[in-house]
Amino acid sequence: QVQLVQSGGGRVQSGESLRLSCAASGRTFTTSSVVAWFRQAPGQEREFVGRVKWTGGVTNYADSVKGRFTISRSNTKNTVYIYLNGLQPDDTAVYYCAEDSDGRGYSVWGQGTQVTVSS
Image 1 (cartoon, rainbow, N blue to C red):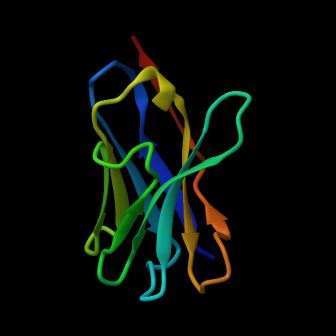
Image 2: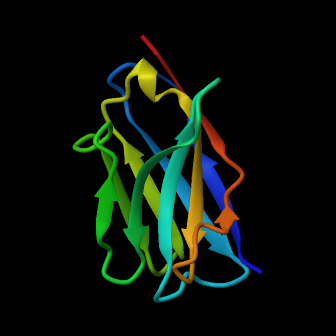
């Protein structure tokens, strides 16, 4: 059974950057894996941020973060990263990574990590 372990996050000022990590343990990401990042701000619904296809590394982003956030992966470390650049207070949320291993939805989730951006 795979587990996703997140790290990174914290409190920053507007305009600063953070890197979040999402490491798989128990097994490796597979050729069909898609790993996505979501976020949930207090009192709001969970929001899609972006995703990467493990094979080929193709990425997609929500319009709200396009050009500021970048997702990458490391095959050797079995880890997906999201670089949060130009952070703004509206980016404050708990960020989650999740894996869709078979095209049937995101069934495995990380524990979440808090990102707080102050103005």
